[in-house]
Image 1 (spheres, rainbow, N blue to C red):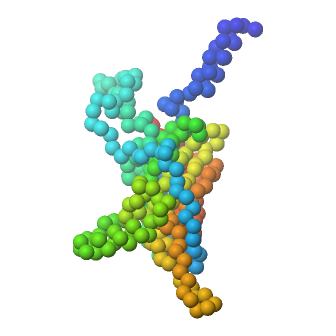
Image 2: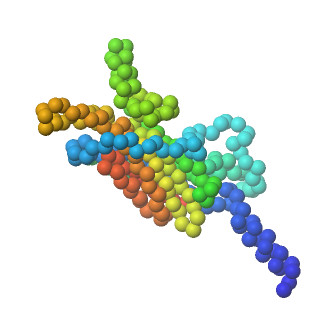
Image 3: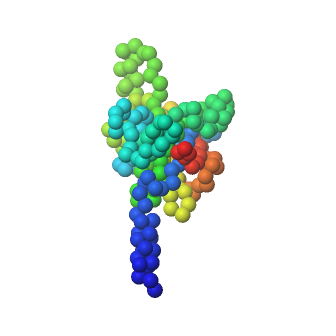
Amino acid sequence: MNTGFSLRIFITLIALFFISPLQAAWYQVEVIVFENLESVSDGELWYENPGLPDRSNSIALITELADSEEDVIDAPLVEGGNQTIQQNKAELIPYLQIAEEKLRLDGIHRVLKLSREYRPHMHVSWQQPGLSSASARAVHIQKFEEPELITPEQNLGQTEINSAVLSDELDNEYQVKDLIFDGTIRLRSSRFLHVDVDIAYFPEFLSEQNETINEDNSLFVQQQADYVRLQESRKIKLNEIHYFDHPVFGVIIRASRLNLN
């Protein structure tokens, strides 16, 4: 066997094994998180907190680029007539949030917004390379209630209520007033694409107590859970709409190849 030929094959396999993020396929991930308004009246109750998502290895989306020379990578210059064009680093920044005009699930978001059964809370998209489970980062997403103008007296009372509702299990990062949901979404690639969804949802009706009358006519009050949790991993296909379901809320995800041209 030709020794030089075998060496070239070996070097090629090593290069493919240690492929860099810039050489990996890039994807646009689009997510809609919405509430199921009919869940309030379906009679289902939750009495135990299911545990909070692990955000230790998560990353927040990059919402804007710094205005500096570092925004341009050291890429080969491409001659175009009398102009020299250099590739913008924005095309290759992982977990950069994609502009609203490039969202592809606007129709679904509009239907949810007009529906009496659902209420969308977030519609967001980002770009990222398709990395393995060992390298892919989970994206941290969260949403808060819009602040309302209230008097100082009302604010004091509301603070006391929120402090009472949140359980001792919640750490300081979750001790936030009017939190709607908080969690992570991770896209990872191997032979197939997979997505991991892990979101804690804090609906208002869970703060209510469930009162029942015992056989001896005594009042029994049971505190409901402070939040519910949707935790699921699934293999997905490109350009297909995937729905992750929970009785209280839902998540819609679509992944597509990112066009860098």
